[in-house]
Length: 169
Image 1 (tube, rainbow, N blue to C red):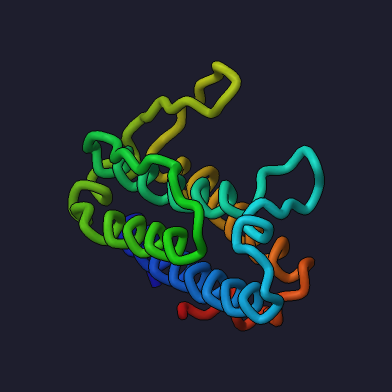
Image 2 (cartoon, rainbow, N blue to C red; image 1 turned 45 degrees about the horizontal axis):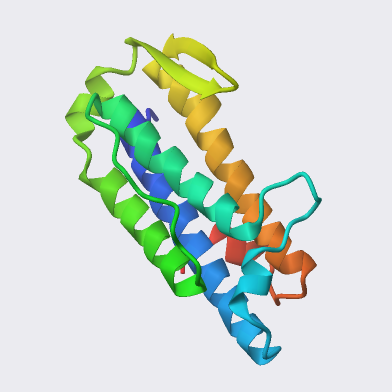
């Protein structure tokens, strides 16, 4: 059985961002049941030097949108980080997945072996192949930030389980 880069990217985006939207919906419902302000839960962190819930979701979405644009060889999209509610973050997960799904599978698959140089933070760059960028950077970062968003909500009492993380909403 073989997998195409585009198939892997698009199926992972659909599953992970779909599940993240479901996790956020459960987080919103839980926060409402507490009669707590959404901004309190969206600002929650696992540790003081980590990003809050809202930023974890934004970064997970950025990994898919910017990553799929780079893999397809198109201009990077602009998604300003302005979300302040669960509903806005859920909408961002859906917009990010829709952007990924709209990328040309043919372009992504044709570029799998091509060299790519991308910024990785702190003024550093990474040069790798598009295929290695997908498997070694985009997907691990997506999983990390989606799992951290899940963990923040779970740590704060939201009734979530493993199935919520694995199943699109």
